[in-house]
Length: 376
Ligand code: SAM
Ligand code: FES
Image (cartoon, rainbow, N blue to C red; front, side, top):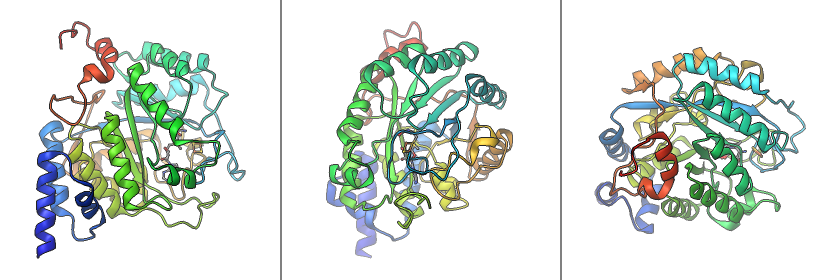
């Protein structure tokens, strides 16, 4: 009874203050008692800002080549068991055409770190998408790049960038990545993206190998510092052809708790119910929406390559055409009590929240999309 009451008090405090001291955050993260009041609180906050709207992003996984070797990732360069593919500019445009017809107004270009796509090629792809679909946002998720490359993509029209920090603890980072990669560089990339004017997304995997509560608290503290517009979290799921093949996958419960806590700490953030969440549990994405998530990312990649973009085992939605995928998600979203909207789905910035004002974060971009709003 005492523990239950204490948890209620902590949840109320988190909803009101949008923050908690480390010990209370740890208590909330570690409890495995029924979470319904935490989820109700997160849902109330998400509804106060986004109503029951769910934003969709058309995910185009355009290359599974990667020069990196992250221990957890199925498309790491040392995995010789997968066949590699790259989509041409025309194939990417075909995905956008199908996506636009289906109501997508954001296209996410995601891939491994593949130097085949030089800056000029990527800029040409971004410019063509923006020229053909000026009412759409382009999101990139292509890893760590030099400042000048990020700047070039932004000037070509890219609006948003997703780069999970993966873990904010140095020692933990080293356990997940080879020596050639560093948390410092990852963080520097994120700060560069913000400075350039992107809407930035960061995040981490729930239940990644060797993860402790103290790491999760550091992740949350880093996000509070970064103030991203989007936070991507999903469970770690092991992949049979990686060094982490025998590691336990992250749990549904921890991922949902994290989603709810993040919604309460970052009321305005764009928070996806990820494919990984739908992979560990058949109704994972619906539960994610009920715990505060407000974005889903159906796959727009050609069915012929879907299975090759296997970051983890048993990934769902690798067999269906884009229309089927979107139709299935639409039914799931509706059944959970929400609805998909046709919209770019930009972040709603409200002064006084945990997010810095848009002027500080992405003013150039805000002005680009809202001409005449200079006095905002
Ligand atoms: N190369 C880009 C990057 O590094 O940001 C984008 C592609 S990367 C595959 C996208 C995300 O997939 C990573 O940030 C990571 O968190 C997630 N991911 C990779 N392997 C995973 C796994 N086994 N389980 C769950 N998520 C995974
Ligand atoms: Fe590069 Fe996963 S190791 S995308």
